[in-house]
Length: 237
Image 1 (cartoon, rainbow, N blue to C red):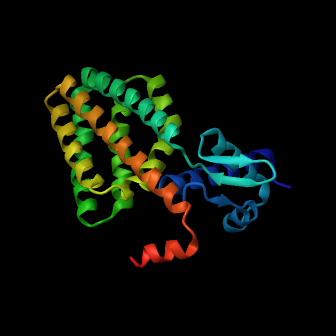
Image 2 (cartoon, rainbow, N blue to C red):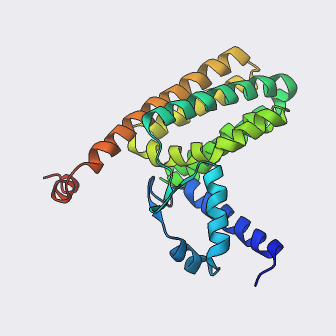
């Protein structure tokens, strides 16, 4: 039998890998997870898998339903709105503090992301683009100098990333608009323009929220189609 410390280490490793996969969109929102299948995939017993899933439940990434199973979280429209509202307030507060405390460092961090984001978008590498997008926004909290703000953002970071990767791709023109706004934000940070940056950042997150809501509604409509209807839709018949 594995020692408690070893089991905890295994559970952490499983949770970290699953968290990364959820953030990258490897699982569909609402997808069922099998403890047995995960145990086999990771080559571990069910105990660390079960502990890992409990950890992910605490982060809001999975739902464990008694007598049903474990599922990737699937936010409703209200949850999307609340998530974006909280995200916006934390990012704006972080950006304001970061610009005042170390504007040069924030500006450098934002500009360091732009060229790789442009390259990823041009190549159609949306997984890499989404990772860089997440890192771009995380910069506000990395440089704000407030561990409580940063900690609060970290609690929702994986959910934000998962929602972004699943729903942005379903919104026409979302990535191009996102890239334009990221350039504006980086330019305003370089100029030390706090009001200008927070105005553009607010518009950026609110636009994303509207796109997510529309994409979520489309997903709900698609889920109600019969199998023949889904097939006809895929074939444009």
